[in-house]
Amino acid sequence: MLWPLKALSRRETAMISTRKTQPKSGDNGRNKGCVLKGAADYKAEQGTQYAPGISAETIGSLALWFGKVTLPAGQRTKAHIHERHETAFYYLSGGEVELWTGDQLQNCEKASPGDYLFIPPGLPHVAVNRGTAPAVFIGARNEATAQESLVMRPDLDGMVP
Image 1 (cartoon, one colour):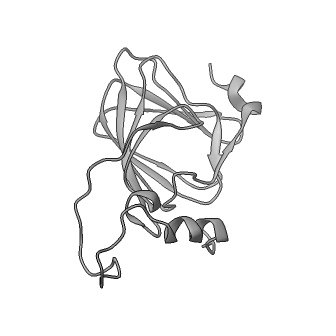
Image 2 (tube, helix red, strand yellow):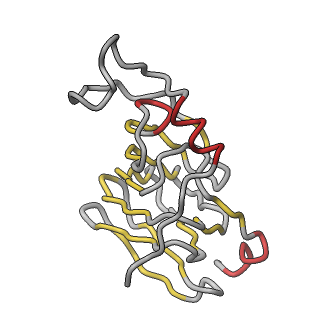
Image 3 (cartoon, one colour):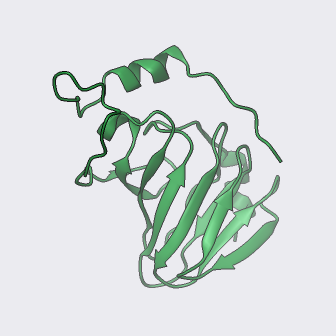
Protein backbone atom coordinates (compact mmCIF):
# COMPACT_ATOMS: atom_id res chain seq x y z
CA MET A 1 0.00 0.00 0.00
CA LEU A 2 1.25 3.48 -0.81
CA TRP A 3 0.82 6.22 1.76
CA PRO A 4 0.01 9.79 0.70
CA LEU A 5 2.82 12.31 0.92
CA LYS A 6 2.31 15.52 2.87
CA ALA A 7 3.79 18.90 2.11
CA LEU A 8 5.89 20.40 4.90
CA SER A 9 4.13 22.89 7.14
CA ARG A 10 5.60 26.34 7.78
CA ARG A 11 6.70 25.18 11.25
CA GLU A 12 8.46 22.14 9.81
CA THR A 13 10.13 24.24 7.13
CA ALA A 14 11.28 26.74 9.77
CA MET A 15 12.73 23.94 11.91
CA ILE A 16 14.71 22.66 8.96
CA SER A 17 15.98 26.12 8.03
CA THR A 18 17.25 26.73 11.58
CA ARG A 19 19.25 23.53 11.83
CA LYS A 20 21.79 23.30 14.66
CA THR A 21 24.66 22.05 12.53
CA GLN A 22 25.24 24.75 9.94
CA PRO A 23 27.21 23.99 6.79
CA LYS A 24 30.63 25.54 6.33
CA SER A 25 30.89 28.71 4.29
CA GLY A 26 30.24 27.99 0.62
CA ASP A 27 28.71 24.56 1.37
CA ASN A 28 24.98 24.08 0.86
CA GLY A 29 24.96 21.21 3.36
CA ARG A 30 24.34 18.59 0.68
CA ASN A 31 27.80 18.32 -0.90
CA LYS A 32 29.33 15.81 1.49
CA GLY A 33 28.46 13.32 4.18
CA CYS A 34 29.25 13.84 7.83
CA VAL A 35 29.76 12.02 11.10
CA LEU A 36 27.64 13.08 14.05
CA LYS A 37 27.92 12.39 17.74
CA GLY A 38 24.61 11.40 19.31
CA ALA A 39 22.43 14.23 20.61
CA ALA A 40 21.15 14.48 24.18
CA ASP A 41 18.50 11.93 25.20
CA TYR A 42 14.97 13.07 25.88
CA LYS A 43 11.85 11.37 27.21
CA ALA A 44 9.12 11.31 24.61
CA GLU A 45 5.51 12.00 25.57
CA GLN A 46 4.58 8.38 24.88
CA GLY A 47 7.09 7.15 27.48
CA THR A 48 10.20 6.01 25.63
CA GLN A 49 13.69 7.47 25.88
CA TYR A 50 14.90 8.89 22.54
CA ALA A 51 18.54 9.48 21.57
CA PRO A 52 18.46 11.15 18.14
CA GLY A 53 21.31 10.71 15.71
CA ILE A 54 20.00 12.01 12.40
CA SER A 55 17.13 14.51 12.53
CA ALA A 56 16.04 17.94 11.39
CA GLU A 57 17.40 19.37 14.63
CA THR A 58 20.79 17.61 14.64
CA ILE A 59 21.84 17.91 10.99
CA GLY A 60 18.98 19.43 9.04
CA SER A 61 17.61 16.17 7.71
CA LEU A 62 14.65 16.82 5.45
CA ALA A 63 12.83 13.50 5.68
CA LEU A 64 14.55 11.10 8.09
CA TRP A 65 14.78 10.62 11.84
CA PHE A 66 17.23 7.89 12.87
CA GLY A 67 18.36 7.07 16.39
CA LYS A 68 18.20 4.90 19.48
CA VAL A 69 14.95 4.32 21.38
CA THR A 70 14.86 2.69 24.82
CA LEU A 71 11.85 1.30 26.67
CA PRO A 72 12.84 0.91 30.34
CA ALA A 73 12.44 -2.42 32.13
CA GLY A 74 8.94 -3.02 33.48
CA GLN A 75 7.51 -0.07 31.53
CA ARG A 76 5.11 0.47 28.63
CA THR A 77 4.35 3.27 26.26
CA LYS A 78 1.13 5.21 26.41
CA ALA A 79 -1.33 4.47 23.60
CA HIS A 80 -0.65 6.70 20.62
CA ILE A 81 -0.52 7.07 16.85
CA HIS A 82 1.83 8.81 14.44
CA GLU A 83 -0.42 10.65 12.00
CA ARG A 84 1.97 11.13 9.10
CA HIS A 85 4.91 8.80 9.30
CA GLU A 86 5.97 5.20 9.11
CA THR A 87 8.22 3.89 11.86
CA ALA A 88 10.67 1.01 11.68
CA PHE A 89 12.76 -0.50 14.47
CA TYR A 90 15.52 -3.05 14.77
CA TYR A 91 15.39 -4.65 18.22
CA LEU A 92 18.97 -4.53 19.48
CA SER A 93 18.92 -5.81 23.08
CA GLY A 94 16.66 -6.72 25.98
CA GLY A 95 14.06 -9.40 26.67
CA GLU A 96 10.74 -10.10 25.03
CA VAL A 97 8.64 -7.01 24.21
CA GLU A 98 4.94 -6.98 23.33
CA LEU A 99 3.69 -4.77 20.48
CA TRP A 100 -0.05 -4.14 20.73
CA THR A 101 -1.69 -2.66 17.60
CA GLY A 102 -5.13 -2.13 16.07
CA ASP A 103 -8.14 0.14 16.48
CA GLN A 104 -8.76 -1.32 19.95
CA LEU A 105 -5.17 -2.57 20.50
CA GLN A 106 -6.51 -6.07 19.94
CA ASN A 107 -3.42 -7.48 18.16
CA CYS A 108 -0.36 -8.53 20.14
CA GLU A 109 2.93 -9.70 18.68
CA LYS A 110 6.05 -10.51 20.66
CA ALA A 111 9.44 -9.21 19.61
CA SER A 112 12.90 -10.38 20.63
CA PRO A 113 16.37 -8.99 19.92
CA GLY A 114 17.14 -9.41 16.21
CA ASP A 115 13.54 -8.73 15.14
CA TYR A 116 12.35 -5.83 12.99
CA LEU A 117 9.16 -3.94 13.84
CA PHE A 118 7.04 -1.81 11.50
CA ILE A 119 4.26 0.63 12.43
CA PRO A 120 2.33 2.33 9.61
CA PRO A 121 0.91 5.86 9.94
CA GLY A 122 -2.35 6.23 11.86
CA LEU A 123 -2.17 2.84 13.62
CA PRO A 124 -2.80 2.90 17.39
CA HIS A 125 -0.04 1.06 19.24
CA VAL A 126 1.53 0.34 22.62
CA ALA A 127 4.84 -1.37 23.40
CA VAL A 128 5.21 -3.25 26.69
CA ASN A 129 8.49 -4.34 28.30
CA ARG A 130 7.55 -6.74 31.12
CA GLY A 131 11.20 -7.81 31.51
CA THR A 132 13.97 -6.81 33.90
CA ALA A 133 16.28 -5.26 31.27
CA PRO A 134 15.78 -2.15 29.14
CA ALA A 135 14.61 -2.85 25.58
CA VAL A 136 16.91 -1.01 23.15
CA PHE A 137 15.93 -0.35 19.55
CA ILE A 138 17.50 1.40 16.59
CA GLY A 139 14.68 3.29 14.92
CA ALA A 140 13.94 5.27 11.80
CA ARG A 141 10.94 7.21 10.60
CA ASN A 142 10.15 9.28 7.56
CA GLU A 143 9.55 12.47 9.54
CA ALA A 144 12.70 14.31 10.50
CA THR A 145 11.55 16.47 13.41
CA ALA A 146 11.76 15.66 17.11
CA GLN A 147 8.21 16.89 17.55
CA GLU A 148 6.79 14.13 15.41
CA SER A 149 3.15 13.82 14.31
CA LEU A 150 2.24 12.23 17.63
CA VAL A 151 -1.36 11.94 18.82
CA MET A 152 -1.88 10.50 22.29
CA ARG A 153 -4.82 8.08 22.68
CA PRO A 154 -5.58 7.94 26.43
CA ASP A 155 -8.96 6.36 25.60
CA LEU A 156 -7.03 3.18 24.65
CA ASP A 157 -4.57 3.00 27.56
CA GLY A 158 -6.79 0.60 29.53
CA MET A 159 -7.06 -1.86 26.63
CA VAL A 160 -3.60 -3.40 27.23
CA PRO A 161 -3.25 -5.55 30.37
